Image 1 (cartoon, rainbow, N blue to C red):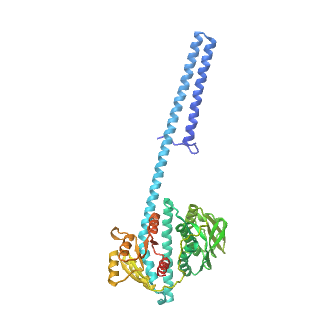
Image 2 (tube, rainbow, N blue to C red; image 1 turned 90 degrees about the vertical axis):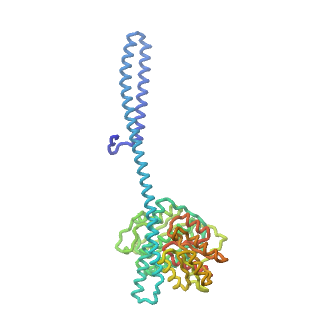
Length: 460
């Protein structure tokens, strides 16, 4: 083993360079001595002087040769030490990469396994008729929904961090109207705001932007969730302001505010501002870190301003897009259905099926639930029914996939029925492939506002 270097010593590369310089200097010295002896012999010309010069040269060369050998040995040891250090660093890097991959796989698996029962719990809670409950029971149900929503957000945050660490997120940049995203987020977060006892408003905008819609949604979800979390009372406003450099999408709140000394540190992972006014359900300090990393990935400009005790503004500036010829249809909030929808739900989890059936019944829809496509087809044919919408979990029993199950049901009818895939799989390639084939992708646990808006669009 090479001797340990003392603290503060130069690096192996620097030492090797210094030793090579010493080696070159010794060679230069030897050449100079040889030249001197040759000149002395030429000047004196006697045999005795030649003998003296040869003896002196031999002694000098022997000494310099020994110095050169010692120097070469030191150089070999330094090079060996450098190779060992580089090998150790390479091993450490490989171990870190393997550990990171294992963490990502674990979080993905844990997220899927935890989200399945969480999805069922949210569906059962949503199916409860609040009007039939006492005020005390309604309060308990409302708090239960908030607690489960917080758990769902935490699982989503951990999964986002794992994907960012693994570097497997690729931006899918498209042009789209910001209204499409805000209208999707509005009903969901307005319900969360009401449950938290604060007012929440979305100001409409007709601007078009160019970016990755899914990643921008992740950014806005984190900003809006933070605004609600740190606003004990008051209001949260989401709106857009046109700027020369892009559309500034803003989240204003009248919450506790942040001291200026913390405004940059809050974007570091796990950093939390110390405050006595923080709620017990405050997060773990990852939301703004995810916002910062996605903003860097998409080249967003971040904007943050805050006034302690009076509130904060968090915003991102997104490049403008070109208005497309594609017609973007959105159901206005509270749109009425012209008739009851028939929805086929395929899932190999019995609790999820029961929860979906209860929620759809509460919404005035008729549900046909099945654990496999064949069972769904038998029920439809027996009752002489045609579905308005087919919703299937992606991972079904015995290795079957949701897109295959939907295709099997669609083959029984002349028209192509609208379809959605439910999944907790974070793979962006899978999601992109499903969307390109015409499926709406629903995250698990389900965003019920998004599902209801889809049913409204289908019926309209």
